[in-house]
Amino acid sequence: MQILGNRRFVEIPGTRTHELPPLLIGSLSESPRAEKTLEIAEELVDDEGLIPLAAEEAALAGPMFEQRRLDLAIQIVEQYFGLLSHWKLGDAILEWIRQCEQTFEQRQELRPLLRPDIWPHAGRSSFVTLLRDKAVDTRGLDPEKAVGTRLSFRQPPPLEVVTDQFLFYLRSTLAQAAYQAWASLTPEPISSLPPERFVFEVHTI
Image (tube, rainbow, N blue to C red; front, side, top):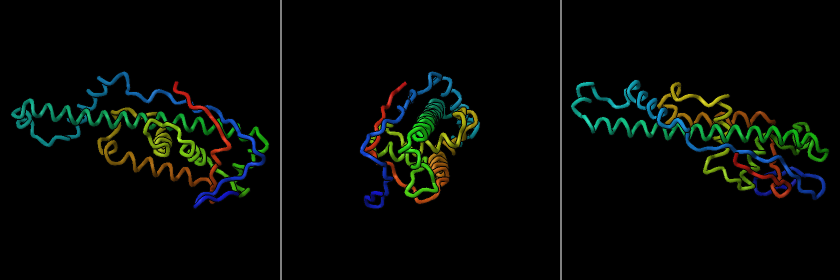
């Protein structure tokens, strides 16, 4: 077992570089229904009373009120698209991890590395760490937060059911907690996978 700083790395027999399945990342761009999403966000602003003005005050405020309402709705849409982008990336990473586990199971020299009764061993979160070690371009998104978001929602939640508090304050905390709970399912100590021993391609689909 190799130890670098506070990092432990599993030992892989031989000197072979192992090829892993490609990471397939779907489009993380905004939804094609952006206009409809903005309409829903404006309704959310009204329904949640995010601009604390009485109806008669809003009427008097006129264009200024409408601009504030639009600005806040745009912020909500941006936060929501950020949620969707993290979910899509997390979904891609979890599918990639599943394929990597199958690859490990098929190769004799890799099969023992994921067994918690053998030490040192790796865990499912070790693949997320491997993405960081390989400096994979995740479009500026945090892979741990992405996986945590995907773990929290089986399907991306529609904006109609998401609160503004979740989008602005709670989303990051929930995703981090979900990732940590998932990572801790593997018994400690978890060792990292040596990045120089693995190669894989990243494709945008």
